[in-house]
Image (tube, rainbow, N blue to C red; front, side, top):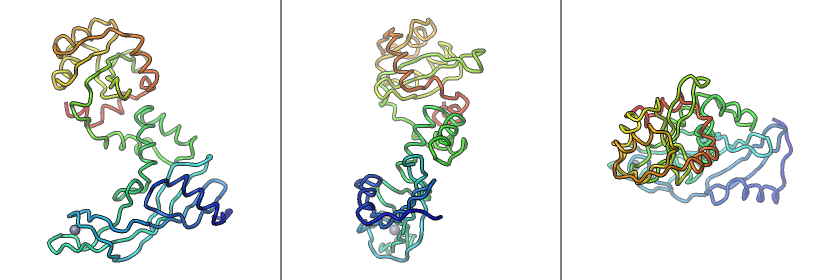
Amino acid sequence: MGGHHLGVGDVVCLADLLLPGVGAAVEAVVLGDTEVRLTVRSTVGSAACAGCGWRSSGVHCYYQRCLADRPVAGRQVRLDLRARRLVCGNGSCGRRTFAEQIPDLTRRHARRTNALTTQLTDIALFLGGRAGANLCGRLAVTTGKDTLLRLLRALPVPAPESVPCLGVDEFAVRRGRTYATILVDMNTRRPVDVLADRTAHTFADWLREHPEVRVVCRDRAGSFRDGAHAGAPQARQVADAWHLLHVRREALIDRVEVGDLHRRPVAAGR
Ligand SMILES: [Zn+2]
């Protein structure tokens, strides 16, 4: 790719902007029409072995790693990282060498920076696979529906104690012919789970597996009231349709594709 090479001062400024506080130094930047390419090297002294945790700074070899990062001004961003394979000094460890990971930037086997993975996961959470992939196309991020769904499925199952204040609401699927239930963490304003229908029975079952719920924020619909009574007698019920709607709108979760979330392990585990 051709492009405009930045001077030393420009490179420093851009590095501060793109990789703040990350253990990596930007050595060169090429500005293209559709792409920004950064040549990056690790500045981390030592790294922990993925097998045993032994810290090492002994270089076995260098290799090139290409990572996609968040787009800038409508351009794709690629990092050409000069990555290190380090020697594990622990004699009882099965690995003799391991690939160094740069904290806050890389993960094992990942071809994206951690920041881009976080951004794509948020897009997948709010929009689901298909709409999310469409948005990514507009944002100069190359990704597909399947990748976004994989990110959703890879999300850690939230710890039970993490949802003390639960919002519950119904939403229409398949153009309003059936209804499903969306559960929202009212503190983080993030979707927690999607239930396949809007019955009291299904909601009560979910609550029985989440005894940490202290407050159920619902609209005035009778089925959620009955479900909360049956499944979470310990919880205080708050009929607050306005607040619920506000949170739902803010999280844009009325656009989550139900089918997408159903394939998540958090839902499948029930
Ligand atoms: Zn090791």
